[in-house]
Length: 601
View 1 (cartoon, helix red, strand yellow):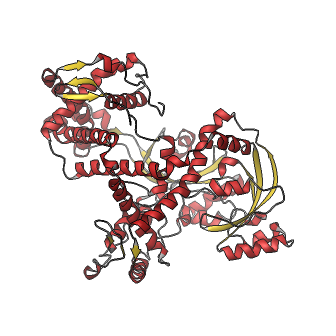
View 2 (view 1 turned 135 degrees about the vertical axis):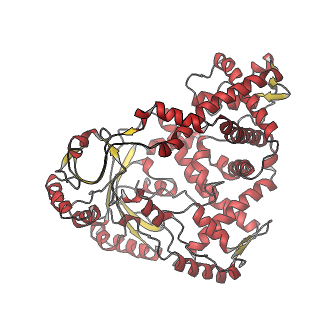
View 3 (view 1 turned 60 degrees about the horizontal axis):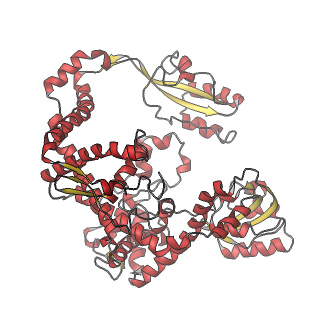
């Protein structure tokens, strides 16, 4: 991937996880709700509850996906019915115990409903129209038969791209201009050369324009990834790895739909904002931009400054994606300031909505808030989420039978899980005396052998690796060693960071253990060959063998036993309740149950 695929990721709240374009690929793979437009008949009766064919089909298809002992055949369907009956009885017990959903459980169901109606809205508004024809798929397949050798120059502004294009067309050398002007650090030092590019590596309009070039030709400026790009086709060659048209069609279809859906989604959202009279107050947006620039000044923006191992440590994670607001982010008197409005219920954006949007899906690289666009992007994500929901309800998508059926499924699922967690598991919990008895009878289980923590550096070159032990013995941190040597080996990595690994026991790293567990405290290894590279490690802590005390082990004993005991208790309760739920299978309707999802299993 060299930066041409659109970034189809938008920040939004957890309920939808992505504005219009974020769901494109998912919907391409799984279009539509199953059972729409069919006459659903009762297949199964459990007590007073009637199970219609669409409900049984969805449950059976899901079981076939997750349970390899079930297959899409009539024999498996009949074996599945008793399993599903037990689930129905469980759900009925949960409904009796908790007839009304509220709080978190209701939020979960509401969130599912909103996701479903927005997905249906997107299909209706632009995704269905993005479906490619057979002729278009065939044309794309023909283009897949070529790979392109390309050069690229990337600049920030269109005007600069047009000036460079004029110079190039007047005889300027692409390979000489790229090192001077291109922002692409990966290719500029090689004259803009990005190597051979296969068809699947590019999406949408950029791909169509590049594959229309002839060897030696230079493209018009292409906007992608927030920059303007000029490409030169150096040469082309056959793609010998291309499969048959039938084999390649699914990925070709997805690629074509992604580009069209992105364009269709953009048009739809622009129309939606216009329809609901979306407006922003530039002065208020500028005020919040300045405030967030000040409040987030301490947040690291350049995650490249951290070693990959450090990114996994709690301290760095907190630095990068934690809550930077150590005090109230907005003064009480400013909380009611209105940054944007639209013509629908609840149609206004106040400062805390923006901050909530930012923290709900905290980015790895925070906006700098140097420009108002950083706040505008957050506001737009907030408004789009709400307008898509409002538009879906205005079109009464939430009242469609297939949507209501899926919501009913979700409600039963949420209620059953909540019932299990809050009613069954507490009843199945071990008494303190039982926990103690288990601990005393299984002391060997709580014995820990010696454990060690290490820092480690991996280098590609053996001569460079041989210099590392001396530096570590001098007391340098692994991050300092990496900084010192990175210019000689850009692939130098410290998988552990300065903090070191989690405690490790002998046997966790077979390729290293024989050396590392022979070292003393603060001992440093010589380079060890691992997967074509060289690893140097230092012991930063030795934890002696010990028996975990009861107080420390008790929580784990309770947790491990709770699930198994709760499963057994639930089965007992279902068995006890079964006589009150007579089962009747409607054979004629069962014969019409679809064994496979139209989307495939």
